[in-house]
Image (cartoon, rainbow, N blue to C red; front, side, top):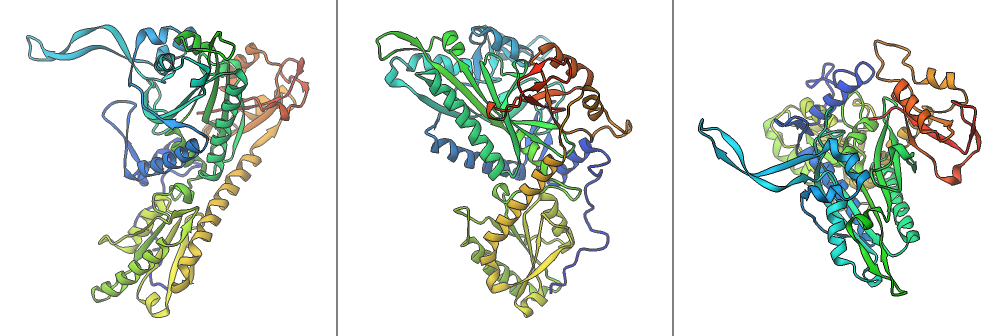
Length: 513
């Protein structure tokens, strides 16, 4: 057994405040403790540090592989969009107008007081892309001439800017990273199939890679993407029982094709407008991941998106023991790296920093690394390693034979991945409720403790008659929105709990980020 034991008062304290005491501050504290990101000097923007960016890189690589498996290719389009492009689609410009950052000058000059001032006014203002439908539409209009040019299936990885009034790292920032897919099709049916296919990709990624259970469906008319005919979404529940829109896929119909002039010569020899889609996820997924899985000791990472899946911590009480212990750590790391986890090398790291074992242990706990391995002098003598899993308590450790442990790692990582998902799924189910009266609905979303209103509510499945006025009233009264309308195969006719009128099906209500 290793002589490394968590001290009664750990060198690095647990997250403060706790989730139950102040959820918003707990969220920020988890990010700080895991050294993931920080606010920049520009209000609303963030610096993503190596640990946070490492998570994003893994998300990006895994999603990119899924996109390419469905026939999509990557491209890149300009950051700047002529203002006139946005004006072509009325609903689109109206939806994004208040969020746009606009460039009006192309250089700086020194004035008489020696201060830099904008100069060289542009003939047409440029919008820093909030999304790329309009500028990509202009390119598609050049590229698409015949039905033989379709379908056009492209994706880009980029940054976007949406002027954010209430920023929160990863969840809502003025500049954020994302991917946006844009496709053009010959028929409405093909575009509809594409819209649903990409939503299914997002659902699979959330479930199998991020260990996040999500509900799927379509947005109500008031919640659709500006200019879209239909918006499909995945909705996650985080630990304060609020919803996060974790991904969207939009059927744009022919709206943007008509605005941009995306026309093709059909098989019948007629000019037709293409049918288009767009879909995207962003670094908001990292915020969703944190709020879904982290605990009062810090971040908890599903193995698939952990930059380090296994960390080996040498325990060196005496300098003369350093060489043998480090040699054992290196040999174990090399052996683990040969094992396969989902057809990828296991990501393993040896923490050789000149810091006490207690400090190292708590730093890795807070970073959410799935497996921690300790090797000290007694472990060398016994031929064992001391192993702790991040999905269990920090003091729960198990001894494994050193020679056979590497072979156990893939199964351990999969067990952690599955266990984290099962825990999140159980939480979602526990806090999802069918409600059949307006009074019970309002009571469910009203905080029981006014001093700690952050954690209450959840998902409600209730009947709604489709009225936009009713939807707006609920939002005004409770800050509750329709998160999604489940797909038709889950329809259940009933009576609207707000009006008493017929309802085609239950919809999902929640407070949200």
